[in-house]
Amino acid sequence: MQEMILMKDQVAKLFTELSEEYNVFAPIKDNGYIAYRKITNVEEIEFDYFNSKIPPKEILFPQMEVLFEYKTDGKNVIEIEDRKDLDEKNLLFGIRPCDAHSFVLLEQFFAFGNYQDEIFLKKKENSIIVGIGCNSPKSTCFCTSVNGYPFQKDDMDIFLVDLGDKYLVEAVSDKGRELIQRFAWLSKASKADVKKGQELAKKAEDLITTKLDLTNTSECLESNFSNKIWEEISENCLGCGSCSFLCPTCTCFDVIDENAQYENRGRRIRIWDTCQFCLYTLHTSGHNPRNSSIERCRNRVLHKFSYYPINYGLIGCVGCGRCIQACPVNNDLREIIKKINNIKTKEEENIIA
Amino acid sequence: MPNPYIPMLTIIKSIVSENQANDIKTLELEFKNEEDYNKFNYIPGQFAEISLIGKGESPIGIASSPTEEGTIKFTIKKMGTVTSGFHDCNIGDVIGVRGPFGNGWPVEDMKGKDIVVIGGGFAFSTLRSLITYLLNENHRKDYEKITVIYGNRDPGEVLYRDILEEWKKHDNIEVVLTIDREVEGWKDKVGFVAPIVKEVGPSSDNAIAVVCGPPIMIKTTIAVLEELKFKDEQILNSLEMRMKCGIGKCGRCNIGNKYVCIDGPVFSLAELKKLPAEY
Picture 1 (cartoon, rainbow over the protein chains, first blue to last red):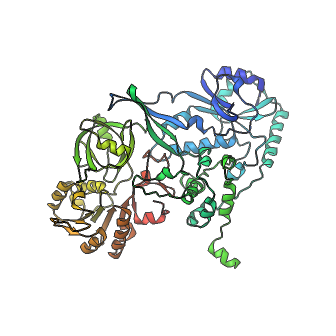
Picture 2 (cartoon, one colour):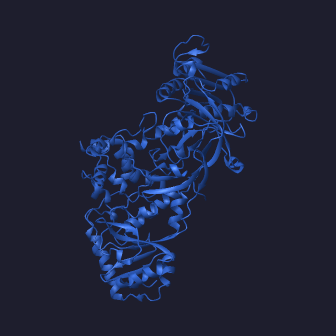
């Protein structure tokens, strides 16, 4: 399909036409950080941004989410109410390629096996992703090491390229094509616009300097489960959990009941949890299968780079670099991977010796 | 597909205190909707997420056997908020149930074999389910000799006393009870489970051993079973793990790339040896 042009000053018009049908989520400035929020006014949208602090995963898998609500007669439950808002349509605007890819991983995970997480899946089904290429990736970005690149559009419905005062608009999926066709007022892109987009893509890719070789990482992780290297890797980890709370592919949650005691009602909610916390795996008996930070750090890395590939045939990391930016002790996932890749097998060591 | 986190509602039909300390109770639950009961098709060894709505949810092994129709049973030790809540319940109270979850004991693969059931302490509930199932008149002919070895700290901790006596009356079953230290009036064995298994000496020929209990008991018992020439594939364990969802989504029950809630809780020793020792 022919690329189109959306002038930045036309976004307001676009928003007006969309907001009746969709909950529009877009990047805004929230307490000094970029965050994806449901917008009510197009003025709120932040057009000049790198990426959000908390990944847009929170739109479809929020930090706190109601599983169901209930009414009691003071002691016993008398009625359970299911979620009623899952059919609402969502438009996610300005999603970066790494985060767009995270939705593919999340969907794969929540649909996997005999049990489907309908809460996430329904929301995902009712969402349309309008993504945008990264003109200037940061030093912590490493999407090109995990099968991505700054202008990767495959995981989006509509792909935008920021050309300064305008966007180059391309429909990627049928869903995206259908939506674009509704806006007859969009102008066609010129050859120069398309060429500029290609140049930006090339320039962006050159800006990513990290190049990790993940070819053998999964096997390497599996065979080095008991390697002493994990002591070194986890030595300065504080167990704060920032890496996983800000990770676009982390899905773990806790479930608790919240009661409005005097109103005879309540709700069961899920809240993000992390394998970096000691309580996460603590049995009631006091036994804890992952009792120290060695096991917990190892679990995070293996989950993304070994268990994910084994279970779903995908790498469980999108290379957004949020865990690297947020770590208070500068533990760098890229360095961890390099250390793992550099573990020599006994045979290799013998040859060298 | 419906919201998988919504429990079915059941009513407590009976409550039995199982031990002298009165911290283990068996709740018998009846489904509020018959449709839910009909959908609740389970095999021994599976578990359910049972909840006291307003307090929370816990994964608990199903103590009843599918052959005991009409209700389901859970044996619960009073430990934390939710399990203490269950202990405070009365007949008629409402309990939420989601499940059945997990793989359960491989009752089909166990057909035609001698079954050696070894249990210690209160981890006996899904073994109760299994033995009840095996002894059912429709199933008994499918299995050969049944040996049950069940150990406890003292006589007051022995669960399901009435049903244990019933089992003894069946043919081709050996029920061996043991307690850790001698107590006046105790007529059965005295000693830890592992040496008693050695003493009983079940044959490993065409047999499956099912082992459930505290980690130290499992460890010592497996050593004895290996002496008795049981192969890793012939030894089954049921693992416990902290869980929230029961459907492989909340994350915490993983051992390597497997989730105890959906890939387990039953694993053969051969399978466990392939997994990292993070359990």
